[in-house]
Image (cartoon, rainbow, N blue to C red; front, side, top):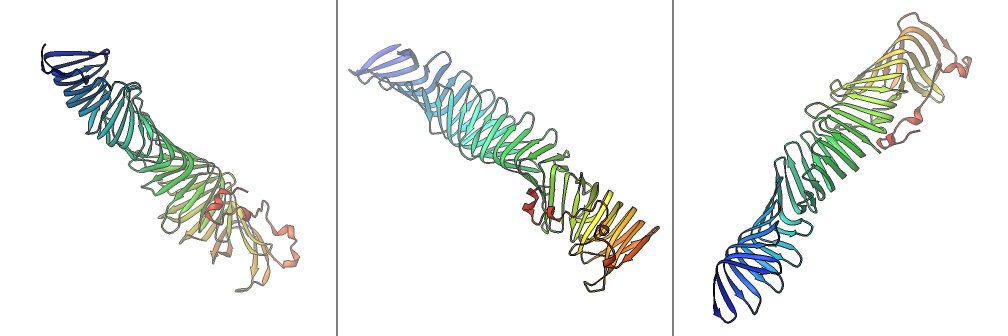
Length: 468
């Protein structure tokens, strides 16, 4: 190293220049040393060695020995263990241990490449803070954010502004949250949502494990099947992409969206199974199930909906209401197509009731029943086995009673018009009597197991959350 003085305050050093300032070594090809001001201008092949693992490289350095602030220019490289930061300008304070850039920078480690317009690196806790056009590129996904903090030890990225995480499998958005790039576990909040090919999940707080493709959402949660047009709402939803299953609970509701009239289902718990294309193929509702649509309502303890067949199955004390009719059985199956009801099957202990007047109930019961719909209106019911009926006969176009018809038969055929039973036809082995009203005792006017459950009928969609 050669040196000479340009004036009495500046020393010029040339060739393999080395400075030592309080344990920090500075290397360069040449330098100006301002002795009075305690400053250094270093040129070419600049290197600042802070420790065995922390080094800064560049083409030009301005160092103030009083403030211990280094400004490095052009082809700057900041190396801390396996983390490498490159930029064109870096400000580093030895007092605070903070390195900053504002002209754009790139950070590379084993897992990720991160770029941003503005960045600050806190060497004491190994934490980066980035702002403006922040991007993390990982082989499995890309993160774009407005404001982000990244810990080079834990490999966790923290988001403090609008953020998108895009992968082959899904897209995630949030405005607050964190992502562990080592374990692929993450949590998001503030307008957070997750979008797969056919599903959209949103809630107050989202958790996602990319390795096992498992997500859960808490608080004001909505899961939408964008192909089947089904929406599941609740305060807690779990979704497994690997197992093709989801589960929802806590004030949960499924909505089968239809422009004409949507179907709303509530239960303690909803479970959905998806096909390989992520379309819902089976929806199951458990415990205290109620549903509402303008033209049909129902209640049971559990329910399943098979999408392929458009088949709803109701189990454990089920009851249906359609127009003026109440229908019940041990199990009920409702078949639909093109968003319209087609057929209904009542298995074992089938019972139909409709109110004819005050304390007057038309009733039909049998082993099994099959109902038929036209334009979502029940118009015919075929009763099979052990049929019984009580029917209030009235004068045509009048409320005047002619009598009460009480009959039994092997099979019955019921026709319904204007939402009321119009006629009952006895198919096999009929036995019946038309009683004058005052000759049939009150207790004989109801069939065994009669139960009028009108108080349980939901009158609007929010009634599905009431359980009497």
